[in-house]
Image 1 (cartoon, helix red, strand yellow):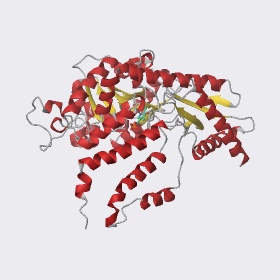
Image 2: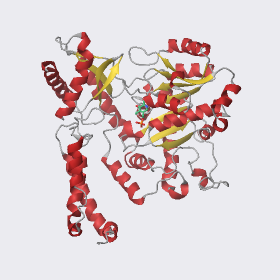
Image 3: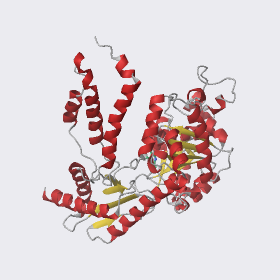
Image 4: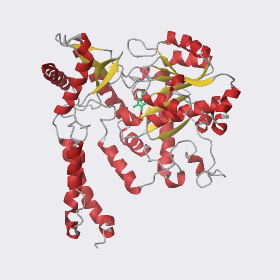
Length: 492
Ligand SMILES: *Cc1c(COP(=O)(O)O)cnc(C)c1O
C-alpha cells in the first residue's frame, strides 16, 4: 500500500497545490459575466462528485493535482456566484477576497478556540475590534463586553439566555418549574416584531419558553414595529399570565431591511423592567458610515446587540459579534464549571478566555479576517462599500416606482428591496404564485439570483445588493429577465 502521509504533509507540494487553487480563484474573480446561480440536479451533481473520488489505484498519485483542480472548479462553478453583479439574493455575498485568504491562514495554522492559550492573536484582536466597534455604538471603553459566535442565530439565542437568566436567576439550576414559584402564575415570555428573524422564535422554543409565549408586535407599512401597539400588547400579555422579560427589536429586518424605532422601544422596555435586545445582524453595520449611521444610531440603547460581520462587513461567514452593554451581563448566558477548560485561578492570560461566555468550545477564530481588513484598509473602506450598495438599492427603488408593471413595496433603508411584478394580465388571486414561479424561473436560467419573501401573506421578489459593482444597469437587466420569466410563467 502506498503511504499517502508524506504526500499530504509535504510543504513544497502544499505550495504547488495551493497555487492551483489560487489560479482557479483568480479566474473565477476575473470572470466578468453576469451570473447568479445555476441549480443542478442533486443526483447528477452527486455522480460528478463521486467520479472525483480516489479510485483506489495506487498509480494515481500523479493525478492528485488534476483531481484537486477538478474539485475546486466544481465547487466554484456550482455555487451562488457571489462575486458577480448577478448575485442579488442573499445577505452574505460581496465578500472581500483577501478576507478569504486570512480565513485560509486560520485553517492552516488551526487555532480554533475560545481560550487565550490556543488563540492568542485572535483573542487579543477580539478585544481590539470590540473597542473599535464599541466606540461606533457609543459605549465607553471598559464598560461593555463582546463575544464572537458562529452566526447571528446562535448570538440571538445566547443573548436571550442571558436575559432569561437575569430575570430568573434560579432557571439555569432548577429548570422552569422553579420559575413558576418565583413568579407565581406567570409564564416567561418575550415580545418581538412580527418580522423578527426566525432564529429569535426558535430560541424561545429551545429555552422552553414555548412558541405560543412569543408576543408578536404588529408592523407599520414599512415593516417597522408600531410603537403605539407595544403597550397594549404587553398589557394583554400580562392578562394572559405572561411575564414578558425581553423586548426584541430589529435593526435591518431580514425581509425588508427595516429599522425599528429603537429609542422609543428601549424606553418602553425600561418602563417595564424588560431586557432590550437588538437584532442588528443585518443593519448594525450601517454604524460604520457617517452618512448612514443615523438609521442605526440608537443601538446604544440595547442591553444586548447582535452584529453579523459576514453580512454588511463583507467577511466570510460566519463572523458574528454579540455585544452586551454591561460587561457583567456577558457572563449571564451560561453558568458552568468545567475544570478541563475554565480557569479556577484567573490570570492575565485566562482573563481573555471567552469559553464561559459563548456556546462553542472549539470555535473558529472568526475575528481574524475582519480585523485584518480593518487594519489594512480602515473603517472608510467598509463605509464606502456599504454606501455604494445602499445607493444602488435606492436608485433601484426609483426605477421600479416608474415602471407600470412593477409594484414596489417599501422605500429601502439599507440594501434590501422587495417588489412584485404585476403585468395587467395577472389576476389579483394569482399574484402570489406568479412571484414564486418567476423566482424559480430566474434561478433556473442562471443569469441572476434573487430571493422571495412573503409580505402581508403575499409572495414578493427580494433583492439584496451586496456587490459594489452592481449598477442600476444590472438592475434594469434583472427587470427584463423578470419580464421574460413572467411571460414564460403566464404562458404555462
Ligand atoms: C441573517 C439574520 C439573522 C441570522 O443570522 P445568521 O448569521 O444567518 O445565523 C438574524 N437576524 C437577522 C435580522 C438577520 O438578518
